[in-house]
Length: 218
Image 1 (cartoon, rainbow, N blue to C red):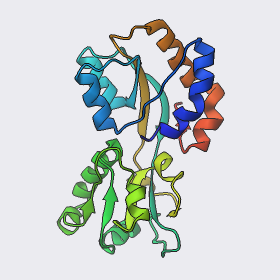
Image 2 (cartoon, one colour; image 1 turned 30 degrees about the vertical axis):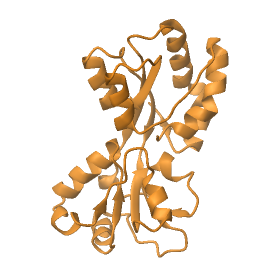
Image 3 (cartoon, rainbow, N blue to C red; image 1 turned 180 degrees about the vertical axis):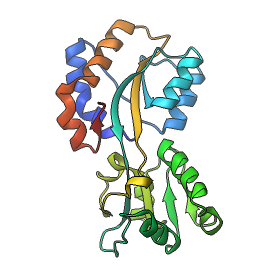
Image 4 (cartoon, helix red, strand yellow; image 1 turned 135 degrees about the horizontal axis):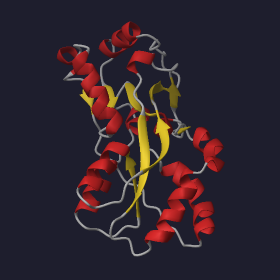
């Protein structure tokens, strides 16, 4: 879901460049990988790099091409007090001081939960961490008041109304996720799919990638 808005913007140009008609469906990463494993027909699969590597190891997709990198951001509802999250100590205090913390089920959420465990916070947080179903933006639950502090890919938070993104997360708490694309092993148009993928990875789209909360892959 993190790449949904970016792909919606770039799909027409990529399709025209490759001489194809391109249909993009964005779902939660867990569901996307499950559908590929169940044998549903796709030409391209775009997921977090580690998820694509797993599918490649199973022989379901070709080797990946990295497209963008994404950090995570922390947000509160618009108009609410904005806690300091610029240092690990301040972030810890903010976490332990709120009633409910929203964390995604995607790759950033998995890594963030591991960080909470490593920092020794889980005894105080375990009952307060809320994870919406796959494909449901954490920011959406924040805007509805279901959580008080939300962590998710920056690209997923910046397009949602009713939120205020906090100052950049403490450097030692930041998590970078690489999103990549692969041609599906059973694609009926693998050469065209490869052309689309190469166009998506092109530096020509760097400005669009940054505008949607990503950084181009170095």
